[in-house]
Length: 268
Length: 363
Image 1 (tube, rainbow over the protein chains, first blue to last red):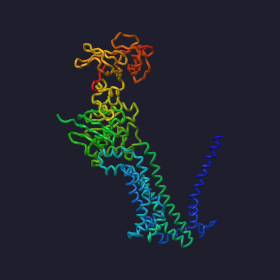
Image 2: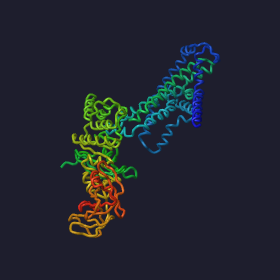
Image 3: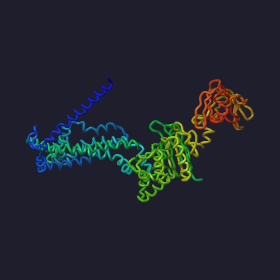
Image 4: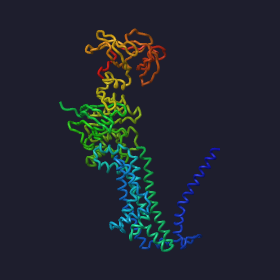
């Protein structure tokens, strides 16, 4: 009797997970399929297979500019926000001080603020200091958004460190900087690379803030909206597929780095 | 005479309102194997960490070879430590772990490798040099930790309960490794432990601590036979402590009325006892005789057996006197078997007149 109920529950759960995956991925997969479809309008039955839309995108200098901007922004944001995130996480691990909780709340705050508010605030602020519409305006805005993610990932790793490792390095003649270089950074390396991938992915995908502060230096999500506003163009599906594959690759690498390292550590 | 190698002078350590170490004063001579023993939270590890520079004394001074250590950073001390959980670097290989202390001192790569390999060879694990730490057994990790600490040829090695995670067989083997190593190197070992058997088996002298205070500094034999106070006598574990008042003073001995009855104790001429003085006496469990018939000795009491416990070849017996007082007795297994003592209902225990050790009265 019980086993039958258990089987039913298991089946229900599997069905639920499959449904969630369909719900999340169906639009993306549809867009991918239509990116190879020769018909101009997305309709069924499908037309013939084509790479035409990829060719159009490939030959569009505006798209290339946007990809270039996006890559510059993503790489810079990846490095900057991982550095800031590492410093914040290390401060949390190493020191105890008054108002530490307040410090942590502030450090983790940006992602909890609605994007549109951050975007408007950034725009107003950059306009005031005469820095709007620059490529590095987007870098700064995205770094603010992404640092908390980097901090969260690196903090998770630091929580697993044996608290005696750093003092052991000092005990063996390492100054605080040397211990940081030879012990803390190597220990956090998987998390640091993961944080970099994750923040690059977030920056690469981000639209709202980029749309407000990028000016003429459009990023890929901004150019997608621009193309979409002009007409319905299956180019979008091609760009969308490219963006999805890029982001997913980064996120999956990040996820693998965070999870694959875990069992090894427990045995040390 | 030159000053001792390590000197603790009025060292106090407070963590907020908690007093971790209360006015520690002691000296350690070069080449000594010193144990620091006490239950957890007694301040023994804090003493070690202060020596390594990982904690700063709140008051007092610590000197190493005459030099004040208080303000010197851990990195500049050369007082390596073998950590309780070993603290080996998980992302480095065995050899890289051993080389670490040489690398931080800017020694060239070839020289580092050579010296690391010499130490690994000495610890009999040279063939594991390229392994990762997680591929090693507990005992092998222990040897890596020792090699890593000793590769810089320090004047002092600090050991913080390094054997606590090993199984009993390995503990005994590693005790042998440590004692031999200390003898060969001739350097000072400071060994923190909560295990009496480890401390008594290896060290030249032991510091017994309780609640941040040093209760006694002496050889293991002395701690065992001549405890400084009641705490130490109880801490050693195999002692019976009898409280009582002096009822009669005879030539060279006193009679004390204790919880189990009148006990006659030999005292030295210098001890100035008066009738009604309060005395505490320690009777080691291994110095008590047991028989199935009364023998007519002076200090003889009737008892019944409550329980027995195997401690290797020794058996620990707990007996109860007729007035319900418990006494610990330790006997070799073969002696009990010979007389069939544990089968008998009523037993008699006794001890020689000079067996009880009277605790110092001002303690």
